[in-house]
Image (tube, rainbow, N blue to C red):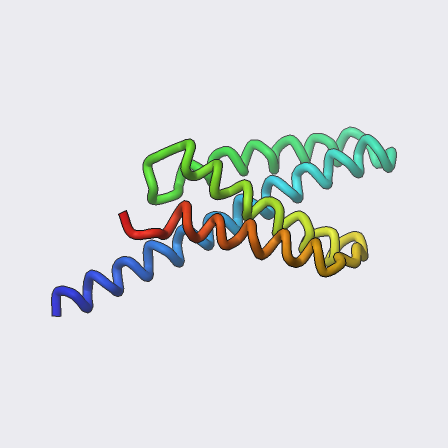
Amino acid sequence: MASGRHLQCAVMTVLRSVSLFVLAALAEIGGAWLVWQGVREHRGVLWIGAGVLALGAYGFVATLQPDPHFGRILAAYGGVFVAGSLAWGMVVDGFRPDRWDYLGAAVCLVGVAIIMYAPR
C-alpha cells in the first residue's frame, strides 16, 4: 500500500509541476505578447504595463515548482517556452507551424521530461 501512495504522490507532483509550467508559459508568453502589442502595434502604455505585470507573475510562478534547483527549473522551462510560444502563435496570431516547428517543439518537450522527471 505504501508504494501505491508513493506512486500517487509522484503523479500528483508531476501534475503540479506541469500545471505550473503551463501557468508560467501563459504569464511569460502572454506578458511578452502584451508588451509587443503595446510597442510594435502602438496599443499604448496600458498594454505594456499589463505585460510587465504578467512577466513579473511568471517569475513568481517559477518559484512554486516542487524541485528546489533554479537552474533545472529554468532549463526545463526553456522547452516549455518553445512549445508554448508556437502554440500561442497558432491560437492568437494565426501562425501556421511547419513539420520542423512541430518536431523542434517535440524535441524540446522530451528534454523537459528528461530534465525534470527522470529518476534521480
